[in-house]
Image 1 (tube, rainbow, N blue to C red):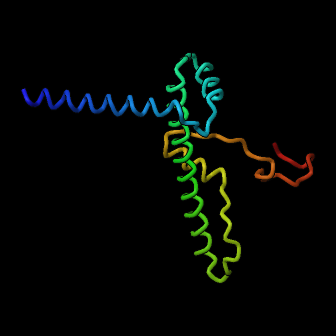
Image 2: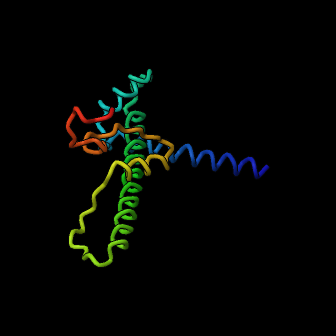
Image 3: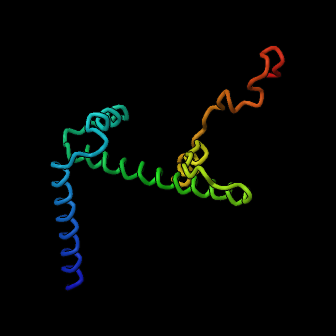
Length: 136
């Protein structure tokens, strides 16, 4: 019987923590505006007048974006450190990181999001050629 009471206490603690967290969202201003979250929720068919739930979605979205950005940064650092190792004779004067679509795609792929982006004109093998001489 003590196990059931222990389970009820744990459930009560979880409910209390959730209630406290939801109450704290009333005074919190997330990075992603409520109106934007409401727009996309409405676009997907979800209507909710409770601002706490809207802000909970905003916080979850903000966390997801931050994790993807962090993963993309790690991909970028790994890619650029590999380039520096290949060119040992060249000094690394420019320490700026250049985030590419490939870095972002890899980070998103780890989260289960597949990004298919269009080939840019400059990325095309035939860029800079006379339009009449292209084999497209």
